Length: 389
Image 1 (spheres, helix red, strand yellow):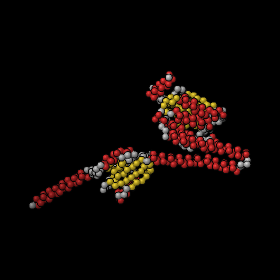
Image 2 (cartoon, rainbow, N blue to C red):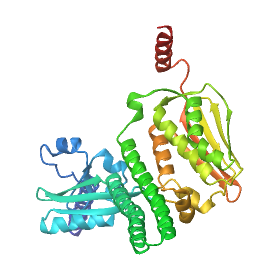
Image 3 (cartoon, rainbow, N blue to C red):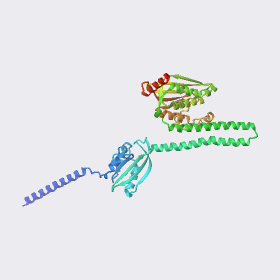
Image 4 (tube, helix red, strand yellow):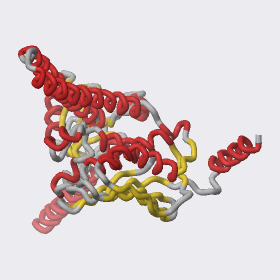
């Protein structure tokens, strides 16, 4: 009897242990099975696919359920989580109260914090448990707005200076109306300030016109020899009055594609600057070279040079290394900004090498036009036809 009871008890223990083991394994299997992601409302996925903004859908735990490719490309997400603490706070706040939120934020585009990005973030509830985050990159808009604001401030300041000077000189002339010598001196100063104001307005209008004109939409082959001659002729009178020698060297018969007028203006500004900042009796050389598909036009002077700390800023609008000398030479601070813009719209670039006290070399680099280019051939045939007719 005792043996039977012991056998029954042992059997029951084994059964219970086996049942517990099976139950535990079932629990483990269920635990290991992935929790299905909550379904996105019908039609939302299609809408997200066509949005220009970076779109992210998050669940109640803050995990990313769905995101547009741009959201990943911009570094907003890492391991199914939002990277930015600011965006996480916005999402959590919207999840708590169901309110739509919108903020402008400054973030970085990569994990090393090297690419600043200005965004507009908008968060809204999506269904009962999910939250929709829309991020729009407004970096370029923000940059242009900053440039416009700075440009207006700079223009106001630059215009205020000669206008204020003219007002003071006119008042001084009235007070000295009975002194012919003083009147003549004040009148001469008024002529200088008036010429400076006229030049500033002209360059502002020219810069505005350049920004609205894309030279490559109606581009023509441009002979670099002609551009160099025109730029040297423009500075010839001033150079001759100061005994400065103007020279041309390098390759000839080089052709680029673009606007002849704009390229003459750009090179003319470089030559004018070289003459203005050179000592009397110095030499200015314009060299032309061609390497494969690139044309380089260099303007070398023996002038006062540019400090290394200032070289990265000289192409900014209204920036002048030596404001006092710029006033003496009539500089407006727009000449090099115009050169930079013309180079950029022609698919080229402008660079500078300079040593203070030893002179400067400005290099304008442009894409070359091959002789076999269809546009060049059409231009050549048209010129031959005009010659024969």
